[in-house]
Image 1: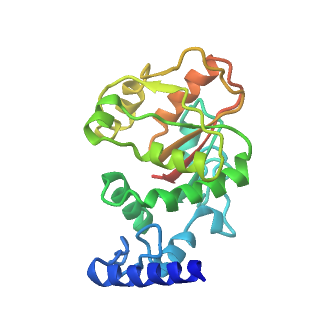
Image 2: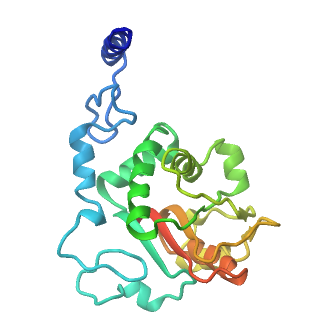
Length: 244
């Protein structure tokens, strides 16, 4: 009986909070309800899930970067012209529309609670393709972390580790340098060279899975895979929220 009373009081309190400061959906700007752990209403959440690569039927996907193919066979046009050190990437979405908005709002820090929603999707993808394999989050630039105070990939990694019991290994370290998003394709390739290294006295897994937020040129993931393979890793795949 006490539990029922407490639950009723909590629901009543959440109702008042919704009236005073509604939990606004980041996509449609309508109230999402305080019962949600993240600012997405049920309708927008369902719409987003319906656009994930995992929900698409009748499509084939690039064997390397994981993006949906239009008229190509096995590999997309960009991957045919590129040389990567990773073996494959599994993006959850195409980086556009509503999912792009959600990721940007999350990365800017105004809605960090979106980490719970996004980490849940990453967990499902990990189970489908990499169950049991350790996840290696891509570390941020130290100056960026100091300025921002938190990292979006690390926030999701903590949830994956604590809630979903995904093995997370933080063995990659990063030197400072020019921010990748400010550079073009070729400049990104050269800028990221030598920017990653491994923590000392840590065992390198044979088949790690890199984890990042957005795949753009593949330069960062490829450089991390190169470092890992140089240190004895045999197969390096990756998961990312979206592919540009």
